[in-house]
Structures are given as structure tokens and as C-alpha cells.
Length: 453
Image (cartoon, rainbow, N blue to C red; front, side, top):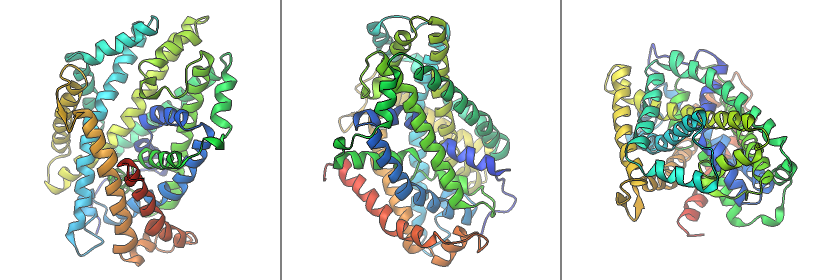
């Protein structure tokens, strides 16, 4: 039974923008382009879209069903559809994972704020060696990266404490359209550069000779992570949906936005990279080392345009990161607010303080104190490995098993069809996907990550 007098999203647009914002993040704008570059361009994109359809959308609907049916925080939600309270552990894992991710993700988000500031004041003007040294100097210092990371967490906190409608929904309605406008401006500018057509061709013309089993698994993993499956984020947001929300339609719309942003990110980066002869598979260094130099070279004849594009780009990254950190923060805030009966502000402070501590240690582990390690990895890399490669896939796998095999099928069907008010033509396919296709796909990701296949 849903909690009474519980706040919810005020509009369908708010639902789509807020939930899409939780999925759209640095993974789309940063990770997707270099993954595409490393795996053969458009062929990878086609496989990625197929994985979204087969794995992503059914997985999203599953979390939506759990969250909306319960109308409560993630831990309580996973205890509603089974007589065994052990299933609450899935919600606990989601809260733990999202808080850890918020901690180390804010380090990178803080870097985006630093580069936005540096772009505004003109600190990134210089050759490739200068830009590379700039990043090494900044990330290796003690104070600056921590201050920027904590600033990002505080900004997230200020949105979350305002609640679902006045905080999360209003912020999403402002940030998501702004994100799209900035993205489109940079795409247009990038596609107008000399030799930009080579980058567009690379992105949009499939080269199936590049396809291997590894490419399929990479696309599967990217689809899985880009939609925030397994973090309990989608479950938490769905608890704020009204009973008239079409879950399958909402999941499809969110997946469409997610794919669109990822493809636009490719159209933003590849034409500019090809224009100045930069390899499309430059990897994670693309954002902070390669691209500042790309902007300078590509717009050398129009330095003012290059200056503006650089500012827009890092503003775009900061916005994308913020839409994700808000959702990560909300998962734990909702739990402490409802289970411990704390005020929303005090509940949010618990997550803010814990994430802030994780941010500090993560930042130090990749900078001034590189001896902060676990299992031979920096703390930041370890947190990334623990969540992305273990807890998130495990959470998504358990959710599929829970909805597909444990939850009463009638309840699942009722939620899918809004108690018969929506045609359930696709329910049979959905149930088959969540029982068989999704678990197999997630298991393959697990095996691949640990080198079993």
C-alpha cells in the first residue's frame, strides 16, 4: 500500500524529464562517444539500440512496477511483492550503490565545474602539452578538486531538499531543455567544421567488419549503465508516479531521449575530432585533455566561437552530471525521510555528508594521495568497479528475477496495464524478456567483466 499524502510528480512531462535526467549523464556525453570510437562507430550504435530495446526497456519497466506499486522508498518497495523480507536487500544495495556513485561521480562533476570556470576566464589557451599539464596539475592538487566536488554535492543537496515537485521536477524542466539546446548548438558548430563529414560518416555508416563478441557485450554494458538500471533510482522515481502513468510508454520515451542524447554527443565530438585529425577512440582522456585542444584548433580562425563553444561544452557536462546526481541523492534521502521519520532536510544531510566524505577520499586517491588504494586500485577506481561491475548488474538481475518469478503475475500485469485501462498486447513479450532475455544478458555482462568469456 502506497504511503498516504506522499508527494509526486505534477505532470507527465515532469515524469519524463526527471527520469530521463537520471539516465542522461556523463555516461551519454563522455563514455558513449569513446565507446563508439573504440568499437567501430555506427555498427556499435545499432547493437546498442538493440540492447536498449531488449534489455533496457524491460528492465526499466520492472523497476517502475516495483516502485509505483509500493509508492515508497526502495527498501520498503522491494518488501511489498513478496512474503520474504529478504528481498529488501535489493533496495539496500541500490541505496548503498547510489550513495557511493554520488561520492566518486561528484569528483568528475567537480572537474567539469573547474573546466567551465577555466573556459570562462580563458585558462585553457595553449598547446596540447599545456592542456595535458593543466589537467595533471589540477587533479593532482589537494584543495581545488575537493572543493569543486563538494560544491557539486551541495548544489545537488539544495535541489533535493526542495522536494519532488518544487525541487527535482522544476529543476529537470529547466535543465533538460537547456541541456538539449546547448547540445544542439555545439553539434551544429561541430558539423560545420572542415572535414566534419568524415566524423559524421564514421558515426552513421555501419562497419560490420568491426563486430565481435566483445563489441556486443560492450554495447550491452553501455545500454545497461546509461539507463541507471540496478541503482534503485528508477524504482524511487516511479514511487512518485501517479496511477495513470503508462509505464511502458514512459520507459520507451526515456530510452528514446537517452539514445538521442548519446547520438547527438557523437555528432558533437566526432566531426570536431576528425576535423583536426584526433583519433575517435581517444578514451576517457577525451573530455579534459583532448577536447580543449580540439576546440582551439578547430576554431582557430574564429577564436571567439571557440571560446563560446568551450564554455557551452563544459556547461553541458555539468548539467548532465547534475541531472544524474540529483537522482542518486534522492534514493537515500527518500529512505531516511520515510523510514527514520526525519525531516527531508535532515535526511538529505545524511546522504550529503556521507557522499562528501567519499568524494574527498576519492579525489585524494587519484591526486595528491595516490597510495589510498584497495585491491591495487585507487579508491575512486575501486568504487567505480564495485558499483558498475558488481552491485548494479547484481541489483538489475535480482530485480528481473523478483518481478519475473517472485512477484504475483496478476499484480505485475495490473501495473503494466494500469489495471486494464491500457491494452496489454505487449505484456507477454515483456514478461518473457524480464524472465529470460534480461537475466541472460546481465549474466553475460558479469561473465565478460570477470574475463570468463
